[in-house]
Structure formats: structure tokens, C-alpha cells
Length: 174
Length: 175
Image (cartoon, each protein chain N blue to C red):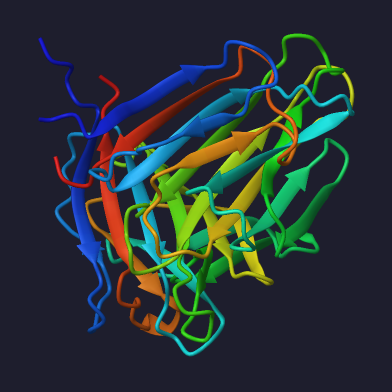
């Protein structure tokens, strides 16, 4: 009997350069954990921009974030609270060297629970060849609602650049 | 549902001093995941795991490092040289039989339009002296698809101790 798949792609979104903000909606509640993998670059006219994860389109100022990142010379940790969007990693902007994209992996355990608050752990690689960041970020969404929608927001609602790819996976525990 | 997280290759070096080189990586997946259990035959206190692609030896690589030593956290950057390290690796003089674990994620490795980037985590706890846990943002400035990967136990001159092992998985975004 073939092995049952325990790591399934739920959906993939790819930017073609037009207005684009990936929104994974109607997320199946049949998995144990979610994994979001991104390969992305912002269209914002800066060298380094930011990525935010927004569960269930909840824009209330209830989320918090703790980040640990390296900028090539120092290790820095910060905490943020009281914002609708909390930081989930650096991404290259339109002013960065052409062709450079950031990669990130986000784990969201127990996303369908209606008992616990949700946490999202993201590791991001944003080396820009002479500058850039490597970061580990955790965002807590203090809600007991199951996550049924996840939006990947660029700073200032800017577009994601052509070629950006976002894939949401579901992981089964059994 | 079809399996979308598939082992491509698993290898264990048979004798010490060997590098790891993987050729003809299938281009049928979307992402690659690499797990290494490694230990270098370097005679110094600790080695430096190096990674390169497609036999490219030029200045196409850069890396941003974030590391903790058990006492301090630090960040550093490597650029312009070859090869670039992706974390410390336990060396021959360190506690016997302790191997470093590294996890590497490379999204969109087969695209031919943009550069390749990898997220790397490496841990070298050895239950003895100074050890490290680190993350690395690795950049390969080439639009060529990754078809060949190579690893070394201390930059480019030294290999690994047996039984260093490596497993590569391919991840598909469509079942």
C-alpha cells in the first residue's frame, strides 16, 4: 500500500507583476500544522522591505512579535506590540540588486485549534550581497479562532515583485 | 493523494576525508530540503561547513550569519570569496561521535529567471567546549537552475569524517 502523504500543498500563488497580495482563503481544517514557504521580493522602492502575516484578515491591534536577527555585524532582538501587522521577516525591495529574492519558512502549529492562541514561527534569509539580514521571528495572534485565512502582506500594502512564489502546505500528524 | 515530499537521495561517506557532491538533481520539484549529519576531519577546534552549487567557484556567493555561542550572540557576513560557510561543524578533536546537524531549505531552485537563496540552520552542541547554534541566509547569484550541490567540512580543502550523511528531499507545490 502506498504511504499516505503527510505533507500536502494546499495552494500556491505566484506574482506576475500586477497588483498582487497572496491570500490563502478557506484553508482546510483537516491538517495538524501549516507551513508557509515564500520566495519573494517587494516592489516597494526601498532596498529592504518587510513581510507580515495576517491571519483571518484580523486587522485589530492585538498581535505581538519577538524577533532575533543578524545584520552582518550585530545580533539584535526586538519586541513589537500593538500593531495590526507584526513583522515576519525582511525581504528585498525594488532598489536591491535585481534578481535577489528572500526565502522564508513559517510553521504554524495547531492552527485549527479553537482552544489555544496561535503562534507563527518564521525563519527568513535575506542576504543582499554586502548587506541584508537573517532572522527568526515569532508572532502571536491572541485568538482561539481556527485559522481559515492567511494573507501575506508587504509593507505598506506594496505589491510583491514578478516571480515571487508563496506556497501553503498542510502537515498531518497521522 | 500523491506524496509531495520525496527523498531524492541519501548518502553516507564510506571513508574519512571525502567531500559530498550530488549531481543530476532532478528539476521536477519546486523546492529542495537538505539534511546533513556531519563532522569534519579538520584538526582545529571547529570546522566551517561550506556549500556551493553547479561547480561554480567564482564570487557568486554571499551569506549573512546569526550565531549563538552559549555566551554571546553575534552576526557576520561573508561575500566575494569562495566558498561561503553555512555554519560551524564539529571537528576531529571535539567530543567523539558528536555530529553537527544542518537543515537547508532552497525554494524555487530550478527557476532560470532569478537568483537562488537558502535558509540554513546549523547546531554544533558537543557536550564539552564552546559550541554554536546558528542561522544563515545564503545567496547564490546565478539564474542557472541548481543541478549540482557540493559540501565540504572546512571550506574547500578538507572533507568529512565517516559516517557523515546527507539526505536531499524534493518538495512539490502540486500534488
